[in-house]
Image (cartoon, rainbow, N blue to C red; front, side, top):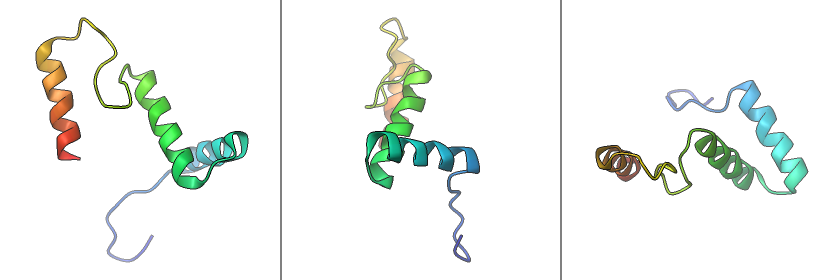
Length: 72
């Protein structure tokens, strides 16, 4: 990590997952990170746009998800 850079990167497990995706899907690093990110979202019931997959999610929960995405 570069001195003064406060961003956290991938941990060892995450890096291994990205490498495995790169090899199995034959994609570059950025594409593999996006695939991994979307898999994590899906496991948590969130679609790639950030909206909950649960159609019964309360409206306030949907607004909260939208606010998180807007702030990113």
